[in-house]
Amino acid sequence: MSTITENQLPGDEEEKLSDECKELLLTLPKERGWATLHLYQFQGFWCQPAEIQSIMAFQKHFQASDSDIVLASVPKTGTTWLKALTFAIVNRHRFPINKNHPLLTSNPHDLVPFLLELTNLSCKFPDEPRLFSTHIPFPSLGTIKESNCKIVYICRNPFDTFVSAWNFFNRGRPKSLPPLSLDEAFDMYCKGIILCGPFWDHMLGYWKESLKRPHNVLFLKYEDLKEDGVFHLKRLATFVEYPFTMEEERNCVIEDIAKLCSFETLKNLEVNKTGTFFQHFERASLFRKAEVGDWVNYLNPEMVERLSKVIEERLCGSGLSFPI
Ligand code: PAP
Image: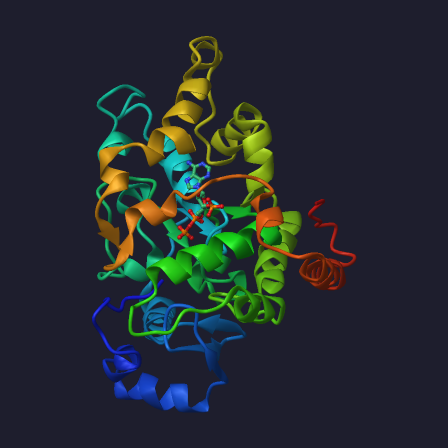
């Protein structure tokens, strides 16, 4: 995510980078950004300039531990929700699901840090397991790839992901950048040009790893979580090795977690109606509609045909699909 502030001129974010990073940028393919002046193609995916520097530092210094839990996603596919659910599951003995729960007074992004936000990359957290999240594609995960840690990946129908991203980045872009029209953004999305894109490579990287190492990578879909939250919460809890007991099931702990982390609960909390995260994005913009199929209100038949073709071609033969 961007680290620029609303009043910065576009391009300022590049000025602040190290000389090494600035030199690297000169060699990378470059396109117009969604919320920054440019996106650069680095290690095969599209990044905002400040992130490239952070990714290089992360790859050099971060040491994964086998007990780490890493939540991975393409932006706008359910990251905030997955952070809330996993935090609630893993910490439920320390923080019982009641009216004093930290999720009622903190945004999920403040409870589960992004790997690239860590200032001390070799930090030892007082609590185990360490719970992190990332939008970095699987091949660029550094020591996490070789570790035995648990990775939970959430993905979402690309049609709704596109609409969510377009709304989010247009609302959160610095005022000094011109708006990105729906048509322009859609064309870029279909070409794979979006933060951490192409989305198909991102999904396939984690999808293939989840087939190869199912004990280490759990692949979830936003739509499945919406349809049968309790079933997928049980899968998630078992996967991260915090399974629900029979007694917890009888006492409706799973339903209580689902309710605590629901869109309706989180959206209406004071902490999520006010303030910002990543320096300038409004927290409220993380909670827009949370609907499956909202894309019908944005995309015309030609757009639907184009994106359907992209998805079909790119995911063909992988076993991964998105019925619309
Ligand atoms: P991020 O990448 O900026 O963290 P992320 O949380 O992945 O965003 O995605 C935001 C989407 O999840 C929004 O979708 P929408 O634009 O279609 O509305 C947001 O509404 C939705 N969302 C946020 N919290 C929840 C939740 N608790 N349950 C279901 N969906 C949610």
